[in-house]
Length: 319
Image (cartoon, rainbow, N blue to C red; front, side, top):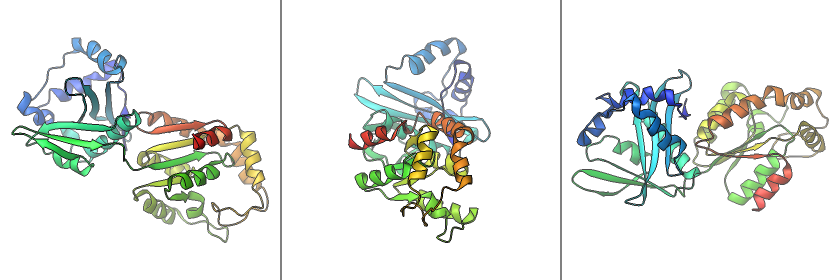
């Protein structure tokens, strides 16, 4: 899994290394190829791009979470002369051919859209093979000259892929239904693809296949936690609505729906199952740390909204 990472000053060794690598910088041959990035320049560069960016610059490493390795960089900046936002995606030569550039470009577009940028461009050399990657990601050729191709993507119409997560009883399903009715986006309840009407549940393989079918559609709202697959869903989504309510309110919410027919469950709960009640009591200990970790990990590229009460959720829907 690839995600963004905000480098510390001492991490700039990686940027120094790949900018000095001829294979990595081959795309830049028309503009001089490799670029010197000596250590005595790190602090001023870091201040410009990562501290005093003034909202006009964005820079992150791409990091492989499985290996912990840095694999490339993504960035955008505002070109004052042309009054346009320009993208930059570089994958180091030893990590190419693994789809990292495509993922990085998607993450960059999500970050730019989250930060209110409507259109993102990149001007690449006429013979740069990255053109195919940009076109696959939804960029179009705006114009070309003898030397460069200007690519452009409208970020205002990005598909919405939305997670609604939090403890049972917090109000996720009610919010998800209202969000579906407001947006017209298809809603999937994870409880409905996991549970059978006879109160049995499906195996992992069946659940994963059903979930994959949903994730592979253009737009969706997915309601539910199911922590094993939560990292995958965070990777695929564009927005997260996280219900972080006190446990007492979640218990009350779960108890209040007993005996009611619901569209998010294939049967009617006739009693407050003790095991389920304990799951809610243990949610802050067993589930929340992972959710907090993921929301922090994806804060750069996903729109994340946290509700601390049902009233906050209602107010968001009415805004």
